[in-house]
Length: 216
Ligand SMILES: [Fe+2]
Image (cartoon, rainbow, N blue to C red; front, top):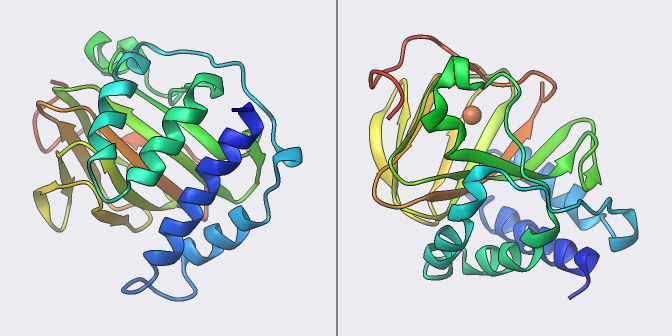
């Protein structure tokens, strides 16, 4: 499959999930905006990546296999088709010095929509986060509003007003601006779709007060 067609297929599968998820969330809400924006993206608009790897990429296949058994299997399969030509990224605030080598080797994301990404946008980020097994993404905040959909992996998610909860594939997780949150993958890797709206130009930062006591 052509790389552009594979990316469009992934974007279309995300659009469908965003439209299906609208009940229960504010309307028009971030997912409405994102779905409408994604619907307008054509293959000819896309900037195709080089397939740049990160160490965490080695867990992508396992996470996709978990996702294929869940309710967001269409996204998992479309991601598998597009992944060879997408570029893996990491938050530039997260270094070996600040996060430890165990984290930076087991964390990364691909961003499909955003400034300089495959589909250009200045006010919307859409991507997929991947955590390797036994990886704790410590307590952090950001001013953007964030909605996650779990694609693959049964990880534990923490939000300051909710505590730790296991979220299975298909779960939707909402983080209002500046709400502290964290997640930890245990036996399985975690693949989760994210959508950022609002102040997307500000990266996430650690709060420095992890509810769990540091990186696993
Ligand atoms: Fe977040």
